[in-house]
Image (tube, rainbow, N blue to C red; front, side, top):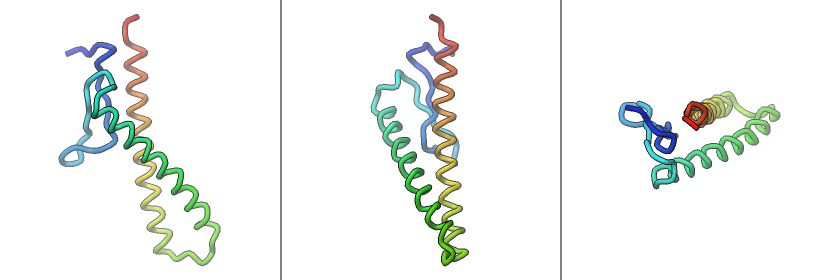
Length: 101
């Protein structure tokens, strides 16, 4: 099956059952695409806020190992989200580059 340039698969910013990737196929203007846009924007905002907290915590010598471990876990989650968004947007760009016309 070939997708036209107006109907492409988009990697969503959340996983499906069993942690598998979820996709939506369409023009990118439907309710699922809008929800994905909002989720990605929220994930990126949280990542920016987390970086601010990380800078402050890393400069504070009184922060405990447990707090740093918690920070590391949240940074891993934020990086995972950002990479998933980049992958999704890169796939969209690649599809657009290969579309006829």
